[in-house]
Image 1 (tube, one colour):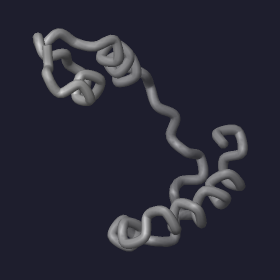
Image 2 (cartoon, rainbow, N blue to C red):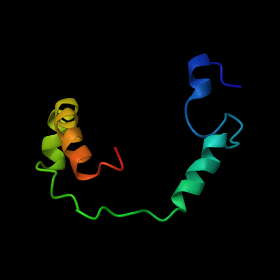
Image 3 (cartoon, one colour):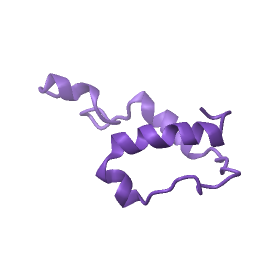
Image 4 (cartoon, one colour):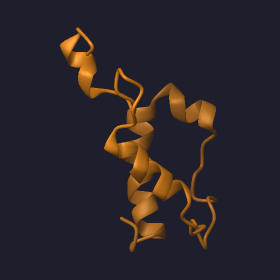
Amino acid sequence: MDEAVAERYFGLWRSDYSPKPAVVEIERLAGMERNHPVNGFDWIDISPEEYYLFPRENLRRLYPVFCAQYPEEA
């Protein structure tokens, strides 16, 4: 058992290398077919590099635009 108490709850694998329940869910999701956006990603008006300069501000600005594009997803 891990002696660092806070570390016992992070990650996908236990200290004995057995998978935590989340691994099963991730494997299930990985096998699902994804729906690709009909409208594409043209509404994103900045590059990934620009986004990561100020991620919080950019996310706040882009989320309402996403909601307008994909109301059923928001």
